[in-house]
Length: 157
Image (tube, rainbow, N blue to C red; front, side, top):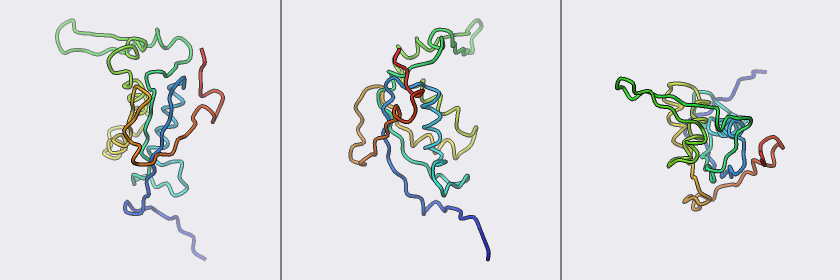
């Protein structure tokens, strides 16, 4: 009897669309869940070199929560390229700014494999919206209740 591991081919992959409501969700736990779904690691036929993940739509990304004092103490620095051009912004300023969905986008991006064409392709399957509306109703997405999976996934305060 010969046992071999089945390896998916790109043409055999069936992608689903899922919707996740990020209201009051803890950012790190949500990003970890999304990264797992984008890569396809939730599937029994997961193949590392094939894009077998789902399309993920996240709504209410501006209402995510952080544990501890990350909202005020976690600071991101960048340099403009000019002398004295070090800039900084904390997580609360980013969430209250023009593009609050970038907080979750960068968290998911940093949980995918680094510097790979496959990770870049998988990131294109992520759609994040700051409000409660999304234009992907035609794909018949399945709604996943992220808050109900674990009590630690949601912060009320």
